[in-house]
Image (cartoon, rainbow, N blue to C red):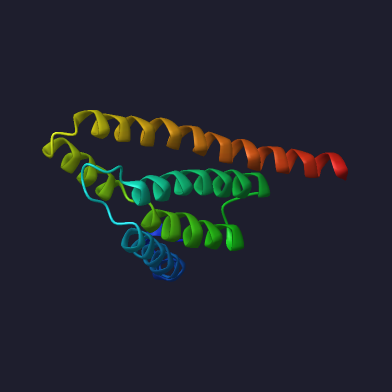
Length: 143
């Protein structure tokens, strides 16, 4: 009998939930420590999203290079990728803060924030993937 699809297994919710609690808590603490007020740059959300892009790039590339998405690797992906990174990063705060910048007449800051988040986030995701690939390749040469 074939295994049930991942999304139909209640047991997968546990690592996602635990990672989500940690990711949400970390984001909450950072957002409280560095609150956003227009026309300032939304530094907390900016760095949270950039860090999340990098970590997710490293994590997913490393897991793919280790083998199939099963067992321990799958639980790590669900906990750290879906749970932690999924709740740590925040597209909704990014959209809200961009909108608030525009609403306060800070069009240049809003456009800069949006562009920098997307461009630098994409670059950091690629950098994370490249780092994990290089580390994996380096391990293969030492054997």
